[in-house]
Image (cartoon, rainbow, N blue to C red; front, side):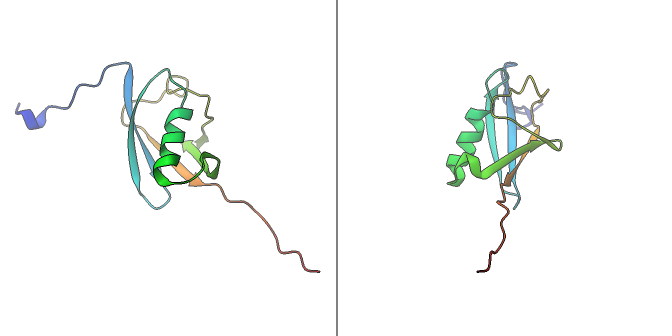
Amino acid sequence: MSAADKKPLIPPSHITIKIKSQDDICVYFRIKRDVELRTMMQAYSDKVGQQMSAFRFHCDGIRIKPNQTPNELDLEDGDEIDAFVDQIAGFSHRH
């Protein structure tokens, strides 16, 4: 096995997660399995220049809460989280 074939070692306490936006832009994070996902969500929001409240984060169709951890969600190394822009519904009110 050549050096190019070897994957970097990730401690078992860490996993790499991909956050994918609606326009297929991907950002990768290495996080601890027992740390709240709030940290990663905030880092993603900062990276794309938006407030964290502007996004809904989903994994396998289930909305993720900021206080959940990868362990609670059974996330594995390489899993993908979808970031959706939170649409605010409204209507036009005519006078």
